[in-house]
Length: 417
Ligand SMILES: Cc1cc2nc3c(=O)[nH]c(=O)nc-3n(C[C@H](O)[C@H](O)[C@H](O)COP(=O)(O)OP(=O)(O)OC[C@H]3O[C@@H](n4cnc5c(N)ncnc54)[C@H](O)[C@@H]3O)c2cc1C
Image (cartoon, rainbow, N blue to C red; front, side):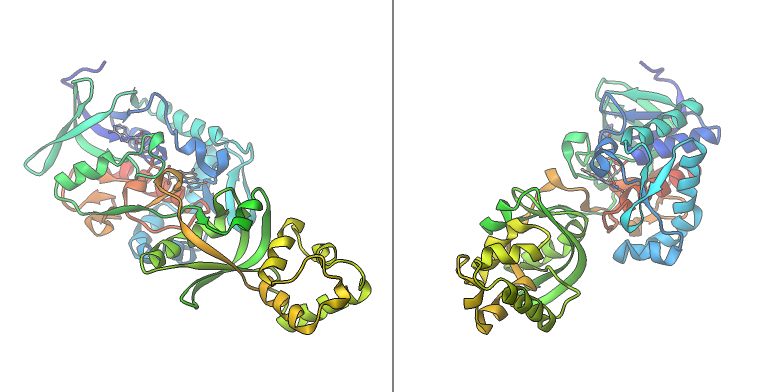
């Protein structure tokens, strides 16, 4: 229970990474802060990040390159990152005894490989500043008067009054963690623009049976191309992870937004080049040499040696229309070239994107044009500050979402008092 008469300096709604950072910073500056979280525990989504290991940021000390990772939204972030960037984030966690390590692609994880270690730092930060915490209580609505927020109405009937309010209720991705988009409704009612919310960073479902049969295996360092009507739209090098529904992995997830946009216009094909460093001529010679040494053996048993995953062989022979039991010495130039073509261009038919329940992020949210990123203050409601996934910011996977939470959370907390 809380005292209904108290007017808090800062009221923070949402106990995810952004809200915890904001509450901790405001309290560190001496404010009387209350943090309201509808789950019984903090950071439910944070604990799932990075497969439970929490990819908390990405090692990118150069501002220009960091901003590029946020696509069209990058232009809003210069002022925010100039106040709180990756280095400051790492300093914050290191000073609080969280040891980190850098993995492939600059992804930074705690050395413990446990998201709990990151959450522990944030909970300690709240305790250090004496933040009053309400867990298991949801905010039902915000109470405004003359274009300012006066209080929030809780689902237990109480009201919490405050001078400033930080909204950190997240987006709509993985709603079972508590991020059900409540903040979007309040913002819209208060006159803000909410860009429509769709799943973005998601795995992709594929209709081809052979893809599902490869579930649990992966191909590292392949070239992945997304096409529509034979026009190539995007090509990236990276890993493809085969699953029971289709494909996943960081590179695929980062391409999902483009795939989603293209699907609105028609069919989409994703093709893989298994040997991106070998030209078709070189690959043909390599196959010729391979077949020459083992002429009497069946092709299915011979070519498996060149692939990182032998279970892909039946699909490749089938797509090349080659009888798997054919001896190598009966494979002519035409069939060899068909094989080369398939290996460098294995097509997969996209069925769709996995939905909001599997999404790491949603595109959409509060329009960044309505926020002053120097302070994270709303341009419409002067005592409202915004942070984290509630903002409509394009981002790639790789720690960039949480970096937005640390940056905007810190700035919101810092300027809300
Ligand atoms: C499976 C998965 C893996 C991910 N992995 C990574 C990763 O490795 N690296 C990375 O950078 N990003 C990752 N992300 C994205 C990252 O988790 C989010 O960007 C981040 O959690 C957003 O933080 P937030 O504080 O803005 O919102 P959230 O974490 O969504 O927290 C919002 C909080 O507000 C609370 N809330 C909502 N409505 C109310 C209300 N009415 N009253 C009170 N409380 C309310 C919710 O219960 C919730 O706890 C991942 C996401 C998912 C789903």
